[in-house]
Length: 112
Length: 112
Image: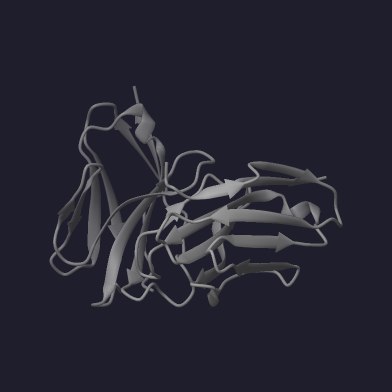
């Protein structure tokens, strides 16, 4: 158990809809990362937050947004969903940017 | 962050040592070598990291060459549960400007 909690585990929704994925980092970790993993792609870095502030941005679409709240949990919002957004979404946390990442078990999103 | 090169796949017999190579010939002085693994559809799992010296923990050993251009992850007594994709990543001490970038890794298959 990595200590990182992601909810929900599975999500099925229709094209055009909006969903919110939630992540609770390990106790004491200030940094939160979001990754997307599609069937035919590797792990794609989306975005990183450190203590509430956006620190790094990867290949995150404009339809996607994220935030980290004062209690350090994070949410990833995906809107105007398309079939191609179907993927596993992982959250990871670390004490700070250069320390090992600890990943949750992911949210499997299916867009129909 | 320095680019790393790994073989796409490897086999190892159960109970034997699995030695996974990684080439990082352009690594800079402040970049650590990190190893993660991902068991099918689970979140990636941190294994070990090092800068110059060899490192060992309860999961594995990391051997880094003196010139730091390559490293080897050693799983001393591989079990079937070690079948996974193993990622070698070079990352600077500050965590990198664009998050942790996972390549294609090595798919290690432990044979019974």
